[in-house]
Every structure is written in structure tokens, then in C-alpha cells.
Length: 308
Image (cartoon, rainbow, N blue to C red; front, side, top):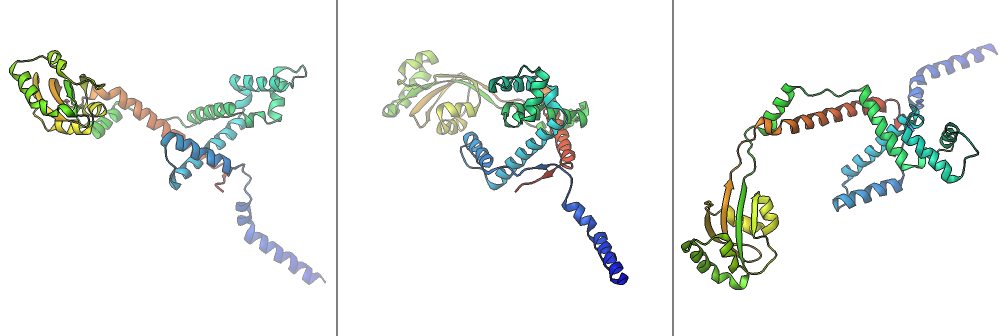
């Protein structure tokens, strides 16, 4: 009788020894984050459509879902570290919610907040959730502080991003618009303007009525394009742009134009001091993003993230 009894325990012990590591992996003692509901996924799609006027690709949607899960994780982390009870904004919000529900019972603020948390009111208040996520992000940055850029880093970034790059050229001009039915008049009016040395203001008296701007000052080609169209810019770029001179006729989708070039400012090379503050800001934001990414990666080790 004893022989089968000992064989049984030996067999059980062997199975436990073999499968104990895998069992431990299958039942981790970690809080579960996700998956997010279909209604929340639809909400993410709707927000994307409002911002971008199209549907997110599968890759973009996956990124949105992961970001949402990260926020859920950060919120749970923040709640666990006492940010609900320790933040005056969330405390005031919870107290207000309790008063709105009529649950007061002559309790103190501390008792009201404790009761509100026990009722999970903080879980259904988007303002509180956003606040806690914000504070939890700040807490992560304290734990994993970003590396501030040095002067050397900023100088290196300038060489990488701006070396040999020039400021955009800028143009100042007047345009005398002639409607399509007056296009044949353009050469004669241009010759008259040149031969008589007509000023822009005098020449503008011959223009056709329109809502197009008659004067553009220190604008880029893209800004001209937004006002007068792509055809106008293409013909302007191919013209000999002499300052204080009439040129044309320049065609556009609206008609034809006589153009007086007031000034052409060909962009000089971008100098370090022109963009130093911008570069420093960019590098600080990149360092902050890297630090947050490290914080998220460490935080994920404490949670089980479920996509589905």
C-alpha cells in the first residue's frame, strides 16, 4: 500500500518542479490594464476623423490604442500613489461631485473625499482623469529626469538641421488685375505704364474690380500662392524680377496681372543665433519625450497590458 502512495507524491512533486516556472508566468500578480472597449475605440476614430478628415490606418489606430492604454496605466499609477487625495484640484472636484449628488451627511471634506473614492467617482470624471494623468506624468519626469541639452548639443543640432539652409525669399509687390475679358488690353497697358513711368497707385486706377489684394508686402512664394494661385507664382518665378520695374502680363486662374516689384529679399543663410532658442526648445522637448518613454517602459513592467 505504501509503495503506490510514495510514487504518487514523487510524481506530483516532479510535475510541480517542471511546471512551476510556467505557472508563475501565467498568473502574474500585476494589475491589468485594458483592453479598451469598442466604444472607446470608435471615439478615437471619431476624434481622428475630426482632426484629419479621414480614417486612421491600422497602424495609426494601433498607436492611438496604445496611447490610450498608456494613459489608463498612468492614471492607475497616479491613483495608487495618492495623487487623488493629495491634489487640491481633484479634491475640490470630488467634493463638488458629492455635493451635486446630495451625499453630504454633514461629513468633513476628508470624509467626503474618502467616500467619493470608495464610490469610484474618480473613475467616471474625465476632468479628474486628465488631471491625474498630467500629474502622474510629472511624477515620472521627476523619477526619470530628462537630460538638458548642452551648448555643444545645440551647436551640433544647428549643423545637422540648418547648415547651408537659407531663409525663405520674400517679395513685396503691387499687382494690377485685369479680368479675362480685358486680357488683350494687358500688353498695351504694360507698355503705357513703362513708358510713362506710372507709379503703382496710378496704374491701379486701370484695374478690374476684384477682391484680390493689390499689394503684398514681404511675403513668401507660398503666401503669394495662397492669395493669387499656383499659376501666378509659377509665371512670377520664371520672370526677370527687377526691383522698381513693371513686368507682365502674368497669368493666373483669375485673369492677367501687371506686376510692380517693390523689393526682392533673397533669403540669407540661417545663422546660429537666429534659431538658437528654437533649437534649445526642440531639444528640451525631445529630451522630455525620451525621459517619459523611459518612464513608461519601466512602469509597464508593473502592469499587464492587454490589447485584446
